[in-house]
Length: 408
Image (cartoon, rainbow, N blue to C red; front, side, top):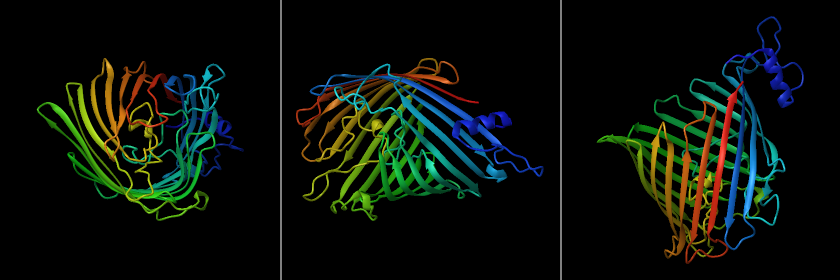
């Protein structure tokens, strides 16, 4: 999409670019040629009440995103640049939540402003190289995610190379220097290497192999199979995954001593069916306890964890005895009605089958109010188990959110 020099100059003002934003020397050179400016406003009300904790929390926050994508940067075909800034604020209207006020339960959307994306992308003959800060994910975000549910997303300062020159084969390798977490000063300096390769054998089978080597934390090596097939009018899909976690291959000085050499296993089996909009699903996921005497369990510190083991976020950190999540999905999806989904989780420990409780989650996403404006309502009820430990507590959370995105 092409924009006038006036629009491009506005982009320069927004992102602090000095000097002329677009220039033409008479021979066709332009610093910026094709450009897309975009914005997002995402106001959300969130309530959180944890039994045995502090006072129930309420927050009315807003995510404001201003971004610009420039194609053929400096008249170089295939060279693109992305700049994006994000602000999270409650505007002083409703801030009864920790970390804004310590007397309330936690809602992890502190007021902050950050450059969330600033990277160059160069593509040629099926290979793409990305350098800079990027919002970035792999697969279902179980291991590498952008934590997009929170108002400030997680981003990566990285060098990323991808290749899809071979049909049905996608290769990706990244060196990560820093992870910018969702908290105000949540910078994780690292020297991590991420590898991911996927091959689509057929619509019913896609195989993915990965190796995520997080410096001074752990190495995770795994394989994942996904696919779908129509059968008697129903759309069936599945996922099967196994991973092994062990001592890290790389070190990061700022992380201190390397953690003990202890193996932990992960596996997941899931199936889902959609018949005339009625959705049924079941999944069994295990984050295993580590072998040996050091304690701890399989962990995924760079995941989008909110999407994994219940919306109440009671298991953002894997319990030391591991976690088994048996969950079921029931819902209805229709263009006129929207999406209505219910999820029920049963949580146990991997070691000994301790009762960690259960959770019911409900989500409603109506049809878009217009092409740019969406809405979501969501509720989570976590019921503490007999062996849940301290502190956990019954938890109630609910959200009401609008999401307005547009380009200009």
